[in-house]
Length: 166
Image (cartoon, rainbow, N blue to C red; front, side):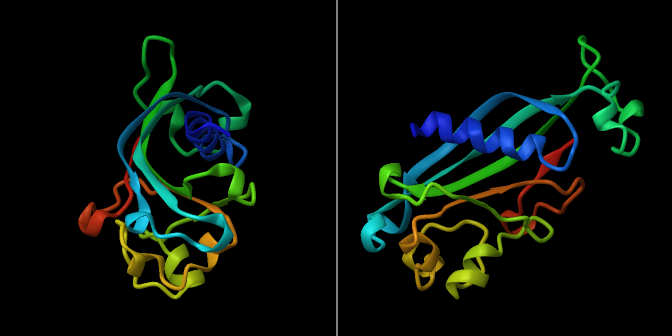
C-alpha cells in the first residue's frame, strides 16, 4: 500500500469510526522520518514515522451525526458543514509489504500515546523517535502499523499531547 493511501485510509478510518459520518478533506504531513534511526525490527525491518494533521467536515443534518452534542450549534462553512482538524501520527513499516496488514489505532489517554508503553514496555513518550521509545519492539516485530490522532477537545497541549480542533 502506498504511503499516501495509508495516510488517507487512516484518516478516513478515524473520521468515520463511532457511528458519525464525516469527510476528510485534506491531510497535511509535517514530519516524515525513519523511526529509531532506521533500526530493523525482526522480519518487518525498519519503521517510518509520519506526523501531521487531518482536516474534515461533518454534516449536522446527517442523522448519523445526531448524537454529537451541540453539533447543530457549531459554526458552519459555506457548504453548511462543521469543520474540524486533528493531529495524526503514524508509525509504519518502511516496506509495507513486510507488515502484517493490520492498523492498530491507539485510543489515547488525554492526548497521551499509550500503545508503545503498554505493549512494548517502552518509556512513555508522545514524540516517539528513538529505539528507547520503541521499547522491546514487540508491535514492530509483529508488523503492526500504529496510528494515533487527537480526539479530545480542549486538551492541554503540554508534553506533545495530541490535539483536535472542533
